[in-house]
Length: 372
Image 1 (cartoon, rainbow, N blue to C red):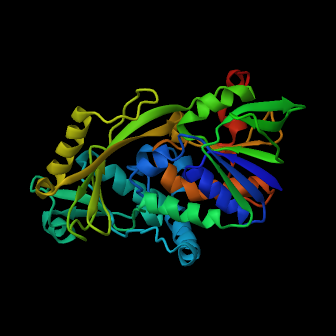
Image 2: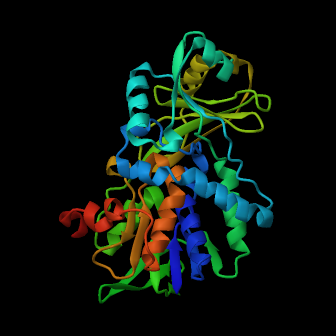
Image 3: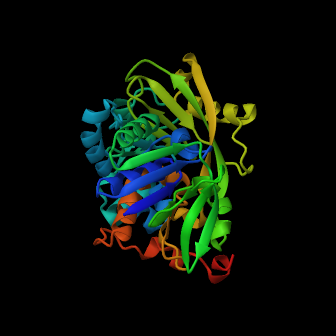
């Protein structure tokens, strides 16, 4: 089976990986905007405050850590690149979420969401750098983070040497040619016609623009998120920390990712001095000692916002050979492996490991949206 994947962020790369490993011939068309949210995000392998999200989001996300561990074991010997899945655990400092977080743990019994209530003495043992003002927290020991730039580099390197995969970088798809309820071929910006059995959209924040030619209007819009990076000594900050939707994510080499903002400003990916200061203020509030270390990088990315953050995974109901794997909003990294696995199972007509109903475009898209 020949498959064209349009978009080379984490959803596109993982989809290609799943399909190529099953023997499909995969061509990946990498738009000029590829990797926006995938490269820019923090890589927490859990939704932030999972009780604030629909169950459909958590059903995908709970498989992320284990699937990344499996892929890392397979890819690292070939690529020489470690995903750096960092087993730090997470401290949530928002007092208003303590009770609901503990209740969520009891209700759903998901291993990743096991948590414990800690008072100050216990907190100091888990993370001695936490500000004195935080006298208690809930601690999630199983939550890890993945170093997403290394993750994408490894998958990309593995696919580049894969006999079933071809990359077409900086090759935007400009037109979809439809006939008899199918895409007959797509046309690149340079006018090249590309034929395939199946076409997969993994176009992230740009999905709303791409979908218009396919006779629908996807409710996907870009939401900017800004981040900052502080360099501390290796293993200096022992845990991830979260307070009022702002987070600290320690990497193995001492870099600490600080984020993140939420702003609707179209496709603008420029940083703002004011927002960056807000991020750093939140970081220093959680861990005051961070102020002694240098800020080494600041950046912004565009998330693919969707209603309720539930991704569209599956076949378009009005086209026989067009599939979606997009709209993951803030949780593309942690939902990505299970999303790609589910897409592969659907395309290849295999038994599915999850109930597909919640992600089915035919269920999520209203008739007027499908009418374009």
